[in-house]
Picture 1 (cartoon, rainbow, N blue to C red):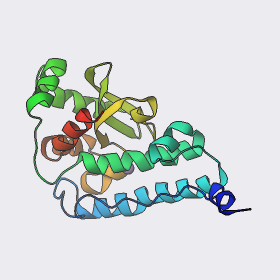
Picture 2 (spheres, rainbow, N blue to C red; picture 1 turned 120 degrees about the horizontal axis):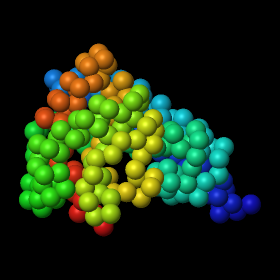
Picture 3 (cartoon, rainbow, N blue to C red; picture 1 turned 30 degrees about the horizontal axis):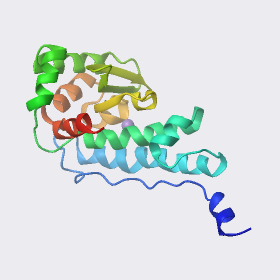
Length: 204
Ligand code: MN3
């Protein structure tokens, strides 16, 4: 038993990433109370459960993306939720942004206009039955809106994700009760981070 053997049995461990802004920075669209619960309790729980499962399951992975792509069942659900939530925090921003330049031209080519995209994104997110996510992705060279159920994520299938919105009730119930459409309209209109989307589109 040398150092290498000891290293080989060291379980992968991930820390809860901090929010990229203050808890009150998205208010009034998303309150500090929602962010505190959603990041501090829900997101943390997914990360903690994933870390516990990683102590028991041996998996060939060096990044969170690897864990998501290589896992199934309970480990997949928790790892995917850990990744989805970090991606969601970065999909939101305190300042109002709009797509510009090359990204705006792609939106116009694939959806007709920015407004048509916003309608399609809201409709898909509103229509996701039960818990899940709405995504703007690039698939076969085209920008598309897709939804996934529960923890599922387009990243696991190798799609390039640009933006996401969490449509689990815990994302909006404190601020909007059961009115998912009001949450979607406020987030899409006021808080989507188009600089993040642009960066994701440019990444190789
Ligand atoms: Mn959530």
